[in-house]
Image 1 (cartoon, rainbow, N blue to C red):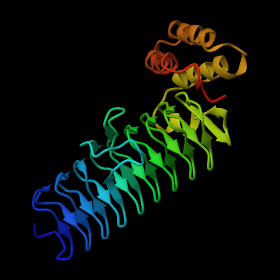
Image 2 (cartoon, helix red, strand yellow; image 1 turned 30 degrees about the vertical axis):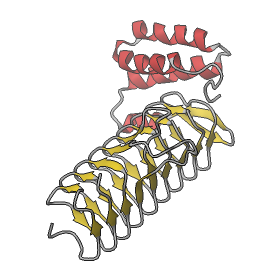
Image 3 (cartoon, one colour; image 1 turned 120 degrees about the vertical axis):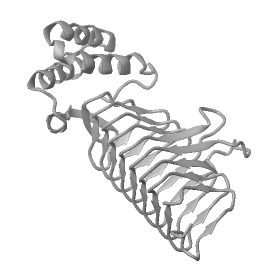
Length: 264
């Protein structure tokens, strides 16, 4: 406990690894668990049933584990769970889940979360994402792996964002954003696919070509989602290397709500 600043208030019931560092004037509640190598900056409040993994960097002035902004919440022991190696910059607010859903807000590993980001109750964030400053997620939002959200992106409740997708600054999402798609606008509209991001992640030219074909089926040929899904399924015969990418897209499209639809 020698790495806890003298002015920090850590409840005796909290479970902190001996290698955890806690900065001045930070408050940590009794139901908090923090794994080895994690650093918590000054003036943070970590409360509720919050579990934080290893080697996270939590900068100053963050609020993690506060009760949800849900008027129906009545003190149930819901959770916030974070993985490993996340960077959480200043003034972020991550709320616990709510009993009306999974009762858990989840953040995976290796995420880069910039300042003033809000994760509302029951959000699920995958791995290797980047949230630029002032990204705001309403309740029950799901963000899959490798997503990049531009500054001031606002996401409506229950929206899902597929893997490798990307939003431009000030995007407003009312509908699901399929994997690989880049969008921009208020409301957001699909602009292209995240081809440069895919190349940087080691996608072969054949896999990138398959993603281009999926974009054409979804956005260029005036097809329904069912028709587009059939054409995307056929890509596995032409491009065996893209089987995983096609499965990712088809799985996402199969879960799209008819009322909400996809970003067009």
